[in-house]
Amino acid sequence: MKIVTIGRGSIGGGLARLWREAGHDVDELGRDGGDVSDADVVLVAVPGDQVSPALAKVSGLAGKTAIDATNVFPARAGDAPSNAEEVKSVTGGPVAKSFNMNYASLFDRVREQRVRPSNWYVADDEAVEVTETLIRDAGYEPVRVGDLSRARDFEGAVWLLLGATPPGGVFYRFAAPGEL
Ligand SMILES: NC(=O)c1ccc[n+]([C@@H]2O[C@H](COP(=O)([O-])OP(=O)(O)OC[C@H]3O[C@@H](n4cnc5c(N)ncnc54)[C@H](OP(=O)(O)O)[C@@H]3O)[C@@H](O)[C@H]2O)c1
Image (cartoon, rainbow, N blue to C red; front, side, top):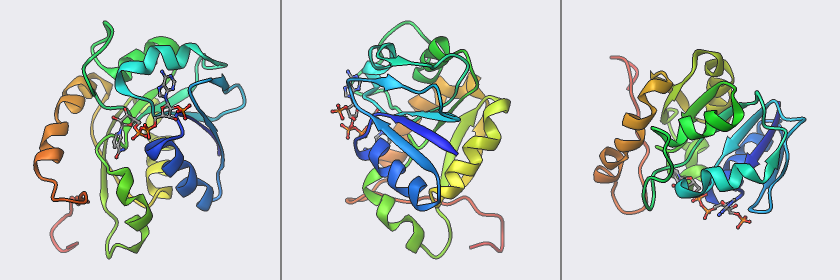
């Protein structure tokens, strides 16, 4: 898959490395932006109050499938109900929200776990297949917790993860009986 990350920091750069290891072709854009015309999917991984300014510097976004990994830090910006819907207002294509509930500091330890850690996400139906593929290719097990109408709730639920996190970060896992 051809992937472009918008943001190349802890999340964008970290996922770029994991996806390259899985055989994908990944380009990384920084704050100067660039062109994503040849991408199959784009990842949005910039500060949560910089979504629209960041996307304004990127060409070729129309209709693209996008995965929004941002969180609402330091504060919610703009008029959209959620950062994910802010992305959708620019791209007009299918959108997922994923990786915002996973710690970039643990990316280099994902593949050494006994079972795959979970990755909660919400998504438009049309974004489910590509999102689940890229979650698995990063080493996680996808858990869809809703469609994009739940994006604001999902962004607001990050306190659950932060509240349960010991020093150094945490993985989480949802499992059917017998899987643990
Ligand atoms: N770190 C985590 O564990 C974690 C976990 C879940 C979600 N998140 C969320 O993921 C997003 C990225 O976090 P991060 O930790 O990867 O941040 P980071 O390491 O600080 O990287 C931020 C990236 O965004 C770019 N950027 C900053 N301001 C920008 C602007 N005005 N316009 C365009 N690009 C801009 C930077 O560009 P340059 O490369 O040019 O400096 C950089 O590539 C945030 O929304 C954060 O809340 C982070």
